[in-house]
Image (cartoon, rainbow, N blue to C red; front, top):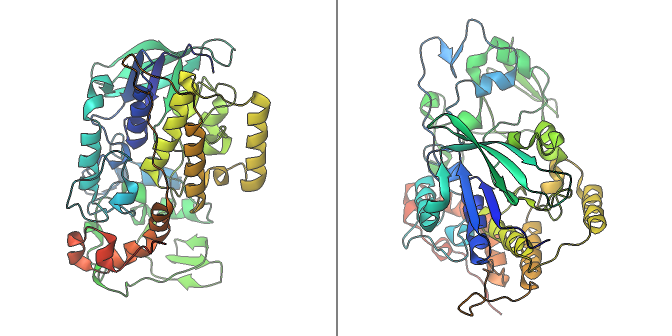
Length: 439
């Protein structure tokens, strides 16, 4: 990577964008780093957006007298601007000792699986020293390479959402950290669109779920208050019949008298600002995105993606990737040749598929990946700043105890939930009966 990278645009001030910026700053070589965030605050997916007001005769802002024809239109109608899937009462699914950034612990006394408010406060504090370089209410609408060279400059068109005007700036490199939890991914199920046309008031995606008030008369107890929640497991959903309000599953079983369908089917990756750089990525999202080591664009290695992998420990993984990006762009770490990077991508596609599977790092694969990124970062050339202090930041080192916590996290969460209202007093996993056995 040529050492001309001096001006860097970071898209998104969520956890991954904040982490990337801190690692870039630690190199002490870049002249300008700007974070563009379209929302009015930092935090990304953890920035709670209140529910939209409902009105008589409307569901998600749609008139039930003449509903749209597609399920995607029903579940996304009248979403708040820059909506996030945060909901009231949400708690993290990882212990805070595991999910925290390597150099910033959560506040003492934080419950073991922190609330969304805990995490949002944590991220705001983490971003404090970065605020001078964050442009809030600034939406990146287009990112265009200037010229055919693999290390060409980038023209970035940014919209000031307060002043309602556009501005074009030039950068040497781009960090894409815009997240992937704001647009719903819907299943290919027979009858879903028909259901949305006939019964739009009974179809929702988790992207718009904010609280359980609408279901108070339909849910007997919360899973937090009983060891036997009123749920049944089924295999894959095969078809829906709105006329009968039934759902049929792969084993032939049928659920009847359905009042509401909540689709918790995940989210689509959206990169609308990359149309000029690679139309396929905008059109196909994650299915067209196959960066080297899940980070570097093959055609333009000065375009980096942070935290596209799924089933991971997000904050530390963002740090592990950011450490590599910062070292490559500062010239302290070399990338392989284009042919070698392409071969790596082709091997991954053969092993894991070209779609979402390419980005799947189900544990312990996420641990192996973070260890690999740590080891790669550690091979960087040693350089010192003007006061003779080595530059750069190293991400978390995943020792045996940290890996054990990662693999035990799901069972810890079950034990934590079983405490009911008392769970808020639990601050470490030992209180739940978990012990790490040191050799």
